[in-house]
Image 1 (tube, rainbow, N blue to C red):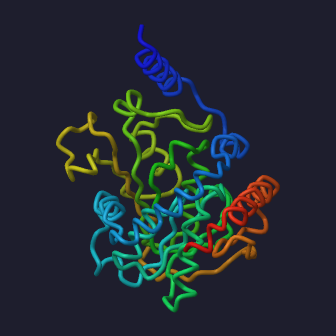
Image 2 (image 1 turned 45 degrees about the vertical axis):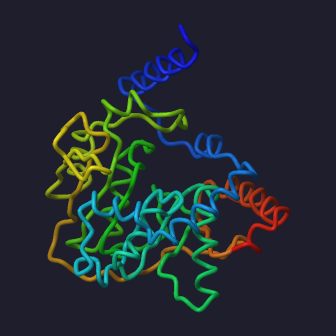
Image 3 (image 1 turned 120 degrees about the vertical axis):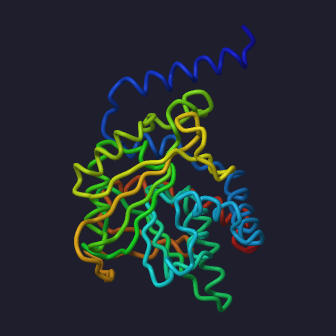
Length: 303
């Protein structure tokens, strides 16, 4: 059997096992082990930030559209929380689409540092940034109840167990009447095309998400399969992705942002850290590694 085919079969079997076997709770150690700091990748991350900005966040706006949020009138004035923001492609596109501000949260500094630095550079240049990048635990957010009008996530839910832990936090920080919307890889296609992943990841059926949303106190939980690039749902379960949505019950109220813990500035520009983060030691170690690479390569001088 050719090596490429053998590798594909191995990956498929691995993903199938993850679909069938219950996954353990999310572990920060597994996430940090997978998202290691590689010096060459840091430069590439900054280049992606520049490219997305030059292109007007076109790819990210496709995600916003797939989430059903590409409506400037609807987003205007909303305070948005993005869970597991990664490199903030979605968060930046939401700002471009009209959100008042986006708070982008990720556990891993390696994922979000470049977006934070780029947003900080624009602010220094006289342009007020509406993107706020934070290192925090999505299972224990540093925000008070009712702090956000909208909570979004892209390719995040299948990382987290227990799912009700994440969704319960999302419901808590939403203002009454606020909405939760997420995009996820569809299991049938994902098992065939998903590359190597962290030990935390496992395919997730949309029905499992809508059930968990209901169990977490949301109402109107629903899902719809999506082919993001084609803007189509015609293939149903054979689509690469699906969208889930739900609402926090109650008469609509305007969100009021309040913190339950301090967000400390870090040595990496624009990036703040939840002072009560339970994996703070891992965060500190990785941030130091990024800082050393950034200084040695003079990356921020090229922003």
